[in-house]
Image 1 (cartoon, helix red, strand yellow):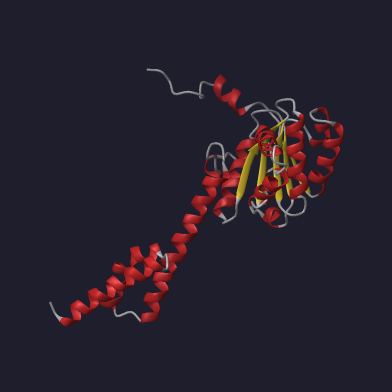
Image 2 (image 1 turned 30 degrees about the vertical axis):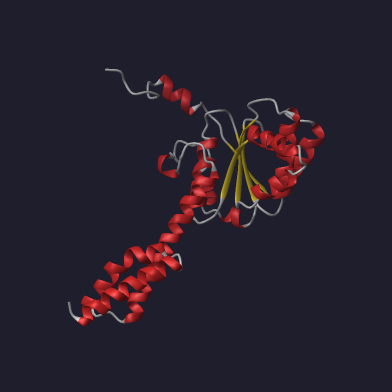
Length: 259
């Protein structure tokens, strides 16, 4: 083995050790191939360094997105790839404007209201996945989740801290309001979340009931304070029509045919 080859191998071992020490796993993985290519094609050293740093940045971005998606607690993985824009009762220009996510950057809210099965949850989950893809954080809740959160942290009076942790997300989604009566602790959790997020984070809700009717679901004093804050900077989108689920079931598209 030549001295040059031995020196090169020693340098590769040192590069690997340094990338481990500096926690650069994507450079470590790419380095052997990139450095071999750089040597054979006589790249400028700066070009080789640029390629390696790009590998690290890209790998970290993908890992962050994957981690944020896992923490978001999204229910079923629905995205705009499975969304039928033409079949939705939401006007196409409204759909497209919401998909820019500019409203999330402005910390505005979104209320999607309409009958069951008209695509409210699908649309919000698709927006949530898009938000994660853009490098932002999402937290997804049902109203029952908020009630459980209040009960869990009431004992040591740390509900406010728990809600504050939720509000680290850029977009917070509360799904399926109006399906069941709202217990007092659930109403409290919803109010606390809306109040904490007000003008600081974007909140998106789906509901079978227009927010103007929330006082029929929860105590009027809490409903009034909640809706006041929720609606101040909110886009309200109404869905209508027959249930997609019922339509598919009636047409025999809800299951695979039996042979």
